Image 1 (cartoon, rainbow, N blue to C red):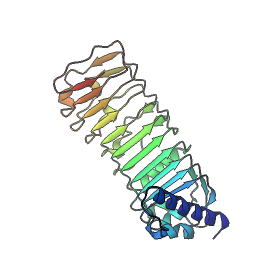
Image 2 (cartoon, rainbow, N blue to C red):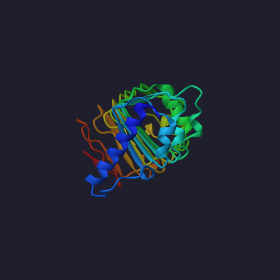
Image 3 (cartoon, rainbow, N blue to C red):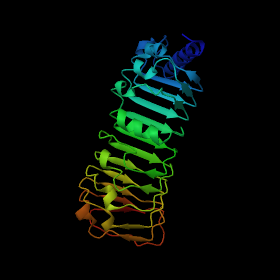
Image 4 (cartoon, rainbow, N blue to C red):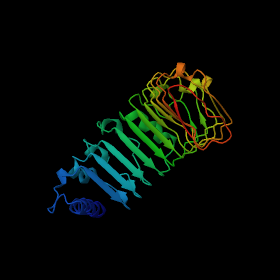
Length: 274
């Protein structure tokens, strides 16, 4: 075991024990095999798979301001029960010959915050794991093109404050099972029925804080499960949702708060938040 990894293990165990005592859960040492959630902060260097195997029952890995360089084997393989990965301002270097598709079969949630990852990273994540939830916050995603995220299992997608300007007409074809789509605080100027057409399971569409200039019924395909639509704080000049119930029969709430100079529609069965 290398010195850095040994120090990191001691830190993780102490961090978990301290938190357990603070919460009044235990005043005894926690056995590493009982640990379900590890949190690593301010670490830089490799992580050996033999080290991480001590935490083989971990389900949540949280990393803050850390950078992991390649080691002789991929440490993810040592965490067979891993369900959630949360990376905050952290990077993980994977060797080219690592087949990451063979690890983390239970992984269903990934959150990235200001990690500076590139398009290839998002494409790889989309292909390799059966994720249900993917969240990108303050990353760089200027365009949402076909195959950017390719994961038929995905149900909850958030891309927040990441600079999206354009969404390709086929962007959602491979993630058609989405139920919750949050694209707040980007630079999206328009949304069309062609873009939304694959999303027949969609329940929530959140476009708050973009650059939309209009909201009209002809922008929507048939969305039988859509319940909530949020277009708050967009520079919208035109709203015409006549006949929207024919396109979205389950729609019950539309948030148009922060939009000035428009008439609030009155449509039976829909609450407009202003």
